[in-house]
Length: 474
Ligand code: NAI
Image (cartoon, rainbow, N blue to C red):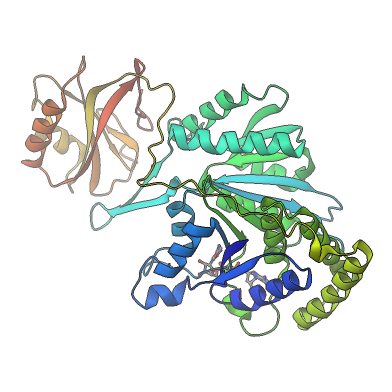
């Protein structure tokens, strides 16, 4: 069975080298197709950071085992890690947090068995960003019904297999009522199919506190992408740090296994990089490939190794100790278990469903939608009253109903203490459904008065207004 291996950037090649050595010593029956992905590929001109050979290999094997890859801050190429997850539809990022022997928790925890699932494709990680004016940047946040359903169904299936008692959805639906609201609504819809599992929800900021004060009260937690990004690192802190946090990116066709941590530029080449998280991501991959005995063998050896290194303050010799120690235990384990190398070598790689074009995810119960108006985003240094004055009476079918600035209503009522920037949202609504042509005509009229930044249609979905009120709007 062949898998694709991309060592990555920074400490990636160092830790991948150790992990592949461990796999070979454990006689893992895998062939490794080593490919180039990451910063060097991006700098050489392919801004995806994924070489054509890497793409072809992953689409053939369906399994990518990768080291961390660098993403420049502010500008430069987009994250290769995020591109890989989105390109190959790895929609659920599963992260497992367990206490390991000899690895102290900063909170003094002695046990923890927590699984977090982070939605992997949508949210602000869509990274659809635009400068709207010189002073105003905007990021669009997409949460979709089919995408949420996909990650929730995976979570419940995985929780049922794990024998979990509780599945919790973390969200911010009290503030982001439509986006996080949809994620939460879909969670409870899918939960109905799993009546034997307790399903509940928690607001994400309260979860941050509870993960510190009562982490063992949770079992499986599912979250939108960005909130999951932050809280999964918090959970890594509970079990001793990023070096002990493995992850699997699960898709229907392609799965990607990688450590949670990044390229650790501060310790590259210093023999200080801890390969544990990558090794545990590797054993998650072995289990996924049904190489369970090999995964158990390596995990057992790893636990003994970490236990032996208990409370070591100076980790400068960590890597060399890690190699020798784990190899010794692997040898002992293999002798005890006997003939591991001849077990399950007949495993076949799962056949990937071939596709001639991307699949369309559609909601099983598409609801009725109608157009009720438009939010126009425009640039202006004028006061709210002056903007309203120019835009009143433009259309017979649509009335100017509200103007907001940075999400806070400033017209028809507002506070003189609300500071404004040169970017307004101007809302036009009709008393009945309108055609797209009416909205387009209105946009052209507004454009004669002000520079337009963007526009959003206002819709009713299933007979209810499906757009947010401004802060302070009655
Ligand atoms: P980081 O995870 O690379 O480092 C944070 C701290 O943890 C550093 O002090 C580092 O030395 C330490 N650390 C991380 N992994 C370690 C290990 N295995 N052994 C010992 N110490 C370890 O996060 P940072 O500095 O924010 O990001 C560096 C780069 O990595 C950035 O370009 C970032 O975009 C990228 N990154 C890539 C990820 C991926 O490939 N999935 C995930 C997170 C960040």
